[in-house]
Length: 380
Image (cartoon, rainbow, N blue to C red; front, side, top):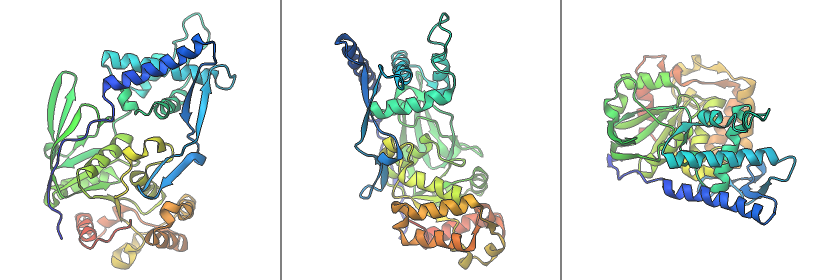
């Protein structure tokens, strides 16, 4: 039965508005001040973000953090510097919110790099690799997202389709029609929660295409227009902003299909979209789309499309190792279809790229997607 086009309601707002996040940061600071005034060791509590504390919620189908907590305190030679750095990030983020200004996580690093002062022969941060994980620690400790702290990352991902989006930027409001963005599509921002909302969605489903080149092929064919679909490419691994947008489209009732390579990287991208990722398990519910389906390409396609037998490539050791690992993950191995697919890879030691579907003719990719969706021929 065909899926009817949907006229969507407005995109839900972020869990906290700017005022609430400022208050959360202020309470965080007051707690540390209170410890100092009482002559106690300044401290805060955060969730343990190690693999041992990452759980899979069978009911919701997402990876999330368990109940384990840890204390970060100042009077500890192993924690003093990180404690000070985390507090500095919180303080600077509070300033950004007060000023209603945004910056990138790279910009934050430079804002804090020399903040110990000219007379101190040491930087607060030497490399961005020091500040990035502490932003995540702060997110987990306070229950907010970095986007709510006015912090962003590089844009990554593009969208085309019958959807109109209201984007409030500074003092301006701009309505974007994603059906009129030409060959380039709408660039998905890092933050799709604050000051951005759907005005209207008229589409049957979402198709997420791993590779930008294949997305461009489908866009040139007008695939999304003919099929009344929303066409997204994460350009490889999906950024937080793209995953969050996919989640929001699913919340508006659109089925989500993921079209990737049949290799380690393609599988990894799919499962981070579907269940979330281990390193972002603390916001798993907001970026995971458990209802997503994997269209392919798959090793099973070799039995259905004769020409693909000449298009296979030798699987790398990484591909084979990842396939074996995935079989051991309970949230993947429990699916009979995935177990069979991964065992075929391990037995044949072959893989397939989505680009191979251009073998018969360039427009075959669209036919492949249509047929898969029509026949419900996907992996869970």
